[in-house]
Each structure stands twice: as structure tokens, then as C-alpha cells.
View 1 (tube, rainbow, N blue to C red):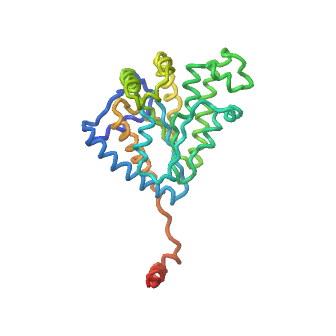
View 2: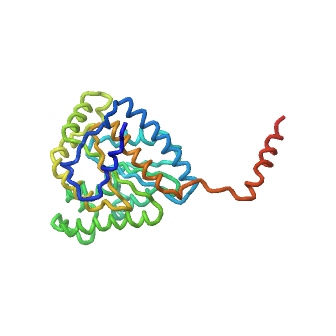
View 3: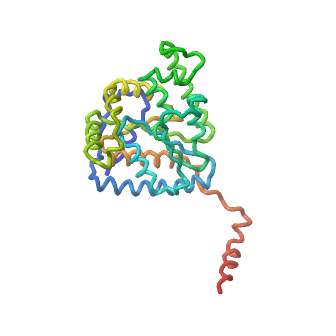
Length: 294
């Protein structure tokens, strides 16, 4: 199986989503993709143990995509072999009353991973330049001092918000958070099929909302604003990766492989050395424990 093309998923120059494929299988069967993922995620789990022992970095994994893009199942499958205490997942919904009393980045800032841990944002701070850009009236709920009507939510407003997001990501990167941002690039037809499956399978019905169909009508707007967000904010310290998402198994493998390949580049992340005195007495400690046998 050749997964070398995942290198091309990184948004290193201006992208056009319409020119990016939504399907990938790496020339492998579902069984082969699943087996490869098992190998990669085991290595990721081992890396997290080392990350915790090293204690100087946290890893933030941001997942964005249209409804049904597969974010939930990706999280479940990619992080399955992690120590449960080594990864924390945050799913950001409509802001609560408490969250509205703070600036829009506050709830994301307090959810950042501690050093030694992975944090996964299922939907992210980018909702504030995606959903709110499609529905600018939502901004009024933030009670901003200089925004009194939708007319105040102009291009200058969005320019400033993108600047704030870039500053936020630069700040956390400079202070030890390794940032990954993944856009699960789904085709409109595949979304239609997945929504139909939600309706057909009784156990999946709870996932469906009529609002999904309303948002689907705004597909083109969302694609335009996703493209703009990616192009404005894909930076060396916080890159975007555009992941073909029509094939869930390949999408999961893509994300896991990118994480592992990029994190292995941090050669300073390794287990700390034992104190010389302790190292010199390891045999004595071992003997002490063995002498406790009855």
C-alpha cells in the first residue's frame, strides 16, 4: 500500500477545493486499510506515552467538515489505542450562556491540551468564521461593542477575525502546542447518501435533523468560506490538511499517518533520562524487591 501521496494533502499554497479529490483508497481494500490503521494508531499510542513522559508539548488536532463527513467515527478509530487519560475530545456545539459572556476564543483556549496530552477539537474555533459567515446574524448574539446590526459584519470584520485566529494559533504554537488542522473534504453526493442512510437505519435516526437539509442548500457558500479560511490560515506552525473523506477508512488512515509522520520529526520528544544516582543503583533496587519473595 502506497500512502506517500498524503504529503500532497497539506495546504502549502492557495487551494481550490473544487480541484481537490474527495475520494482516496490508496489502491487498497477495506481490510488492508483497516489493518494499516491498526499498525499506525498503535505507534501513535506509544508516541503519546513518550509525549507524556517528556512533558513539554501538547498536541491539538482540529477536525472540520460538513455534516456526515465522519468526524466522530474518525476520532473513535484513530485514537482507540491511546491511554484514556492521554487524549481529551471536545465537541463544540452552540455556545452556552456562560460561553457567550466571554470572547469567542475563550471556550477553545480553556480546552487546549495540557503538556503531554492530545486534545481533539470536534468542530473548532473555525466555526466562528464558517457558520457565522454563512449566517452573519449569529454574530449579533456575541454582543460585541461595535456590532449593532448585520451590516456591521463586513469584510473588515472578517479580516480582523482571521487575524485574531492566526494570532491565537501562533501564540499556542510558540508555547508548546503542536497544531494540526484537518478538513474532511466530502462530496455533496456522498453527503446525500449518508443522510439517506441516517434515515433508513433506525439506530441512526437520532443523528438526523431537518436542519441538515437546510444547511445542505447552502453547500456552495460553505465550500467558498472553507476555501477562504484554509487559504488565510494554513501556516507552517498550524497547517491545514485537506483529507479526501468519501472513503472513511482511507480518511482515518490519512489523518493517523500524517500525525505519526509529522510528530516523529520532533526528535527532542523522548523519555527523560534517569538520574545518574538512580541508574547506578538499579540492580540494588531490583535485588531489594526480589528479596521480598516469601
